Image (cartoon, rainbow, N blue to C red):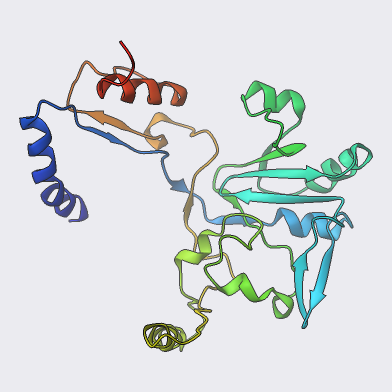
Length: 249
């Protein structure tokens, strides 16, 4: 049903493009695969004494400057930053036994995957199939930071897909959301604190290389000759520039 609605909405745009002789491209950045098992890297680092927090009003906040190591998670990839070279082995050991880590890339591993950037973590964790990484670092929900239940992308040390959900354990969550929205419309201060602290609602993710092409990103073109077979992600930009006549050729 959703695909049919999308076809109807896009039809006028596609027809206009065809009349002007343009090539229409539909491109997905990634494919979503089933992943319903969260992995808490920062909690493992904290339990190993490598990650530090500071407390304010009873809430805990990650202290990256005091931490010997911490992870910045993004779906199924996490950059693990290690302050000193002498802490690298301790960090590796703290993560070695964490279930749900498929790979832990060092300098050679990062180079092999083409992600040996100067700003990359000293280690890069790749989730095992069916798993994904949270940013969570608190060990007691009562001490979670004030932003944990908010849509707050700039304060969380990592992407939080749980922001897509309302807390299923709170019977008044929709009423709270409605009240916060009403305050917003009235120009008053408000807090939309409705995000769950439990990562269980997340059922899909992306980031690790897909195990099959069916789980990967897709490129569709109205010109069958535009791209055939598999296409490297780094080849997408020059392809689009060529189709748009902006490649200088």
